[in-house]
Figure (cartoon, rainbow, N blue to C red):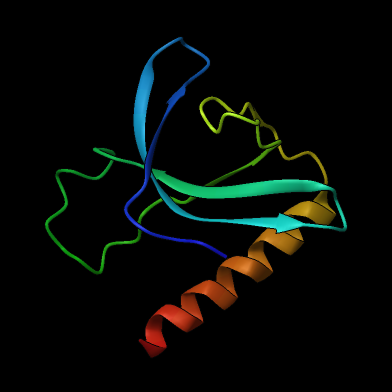
Length: 98
């Protein structure tokens, strides 16, 4: 599991670009995909409170050789969502310990 101050740009369904901070990425052998959890920068800029919940988004991706533009894929199954939620909870628990 990797995390840091990495950013990526996504294009939404309206063709607008959004810069996102990558929270962490991980691979799943069960599903044969990689996953990224991220939040869109600027979404909560009017919120000064550090405790404010940020909206976390998740997507699957198949890593590309050049690491430039791996295509984000929609997560379609409840099994994948359950696994992602479990990974997120583990990640957040580890963050609190630090």
